[in-house]
Image (cartoon, rainbow, N blue to C red; front, side):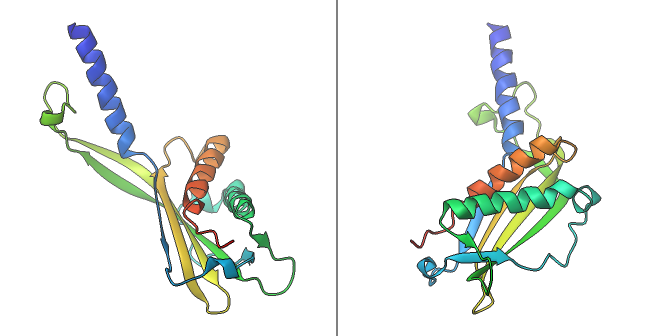
Length: 180
């Protein structure tokens, strides 16, 4: 019985640690905007600021993965990339990697700890991807989505990076209103 209790406690601890590194996704939309008026998009000028991390700045696949994932999701929502002329929307993205600290405050009352119930400090690198959608007529951001997740074991693994980018972009753009 004691062995089973320990196994359950270890499983709960693993879920708690994994939970702190789960992807956070959110967005902000300009409420007064009728998204039905938009049909076409294109990519805006590249972000003037580097990510600040050579692992992204010098990664030839990072930009391709982000743009490919965004284009796929926008096409699924009925948007078309402008072949010529001025598009209705410009898409910009910004990426950053920063050190994060998560204090895993344990709560004895809810059974999130085993043995000594000491809080643990977990240090990790978090990658943040921000997508901005700008109305070309007003030059205002009408929608912004962001996703943040741990990049542990992602930066050196192109397949994992692609999956994480796809998940983040998909979850962000699920929040983009459909206008038609």
